[in-house]
Image (tube, rainbow, N blue to C red; front, top):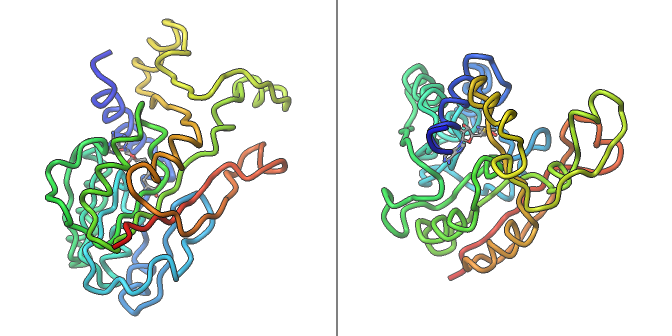
Length: 257
Ligand SMILES: C[S@@+](CC[C@H](N)C(=O)[O-])C[C@H]1O[C@@H](n2cnc3c(N)ncnc32)[C@H](O)[C@@H]1O
């Protein structure tokens, strides 16, 4: 394998080819509605972000962090925000850029690693939208620290992430037998847990490597970075675990003045 960043870039570019649902951009109708002030976005699979989490976004500088694919950025730009979409995958960013060109939106794209936002000066953004994506990196603490730095005072980061139970399950067995077996400890890493043979298969098939982070890193990580948590909800994932528990989490964190 080359390195994680490069591998997962190729893997997400491949997801674009395969038509993964998180690579399908917003449709024209939703862009038009957003231009007329009516819009919704998600941080997690299903539940829309509460309107009061977003507030009035007109003219605001918004960073859509690891949020390529055209789901959030074009909608927010159509609703009047100045949007920067940041992502590791050039093909995901192309979705956003194409939408910006087609609908004449105030949206730019930047390619990079969410763990390193050094291309942005301190105090650059009013709002960061960070949908489920930190399961694709090995260490999430730099994301919270960097987000705190690039946010203006009184800015917010709205994040979606996985409940770690998602990474405890042996999904292959669960999918085959409808029975769940707890198989992995948290923190979980594909890189540490997969057999060399499986890793080779991932490389060959360009499958995305994933990581299951603890609630300590997800929640205390934000608090340690300096944020105050002001909102929380959970969401379903559309899989077998839904009848037992919600498997996705969204948080609203404030950089207080
Ligand atoms: C599930 S998609 C999320 C984006 C989508 N707009 C959504 O609504 O959830 C995960 C995204 O994270 C990006 N990503 C993965 N690792 C990254 C990294 N290290 N830095 C920046 N983006 C990364 C992928 O390229 C992909 O576009």
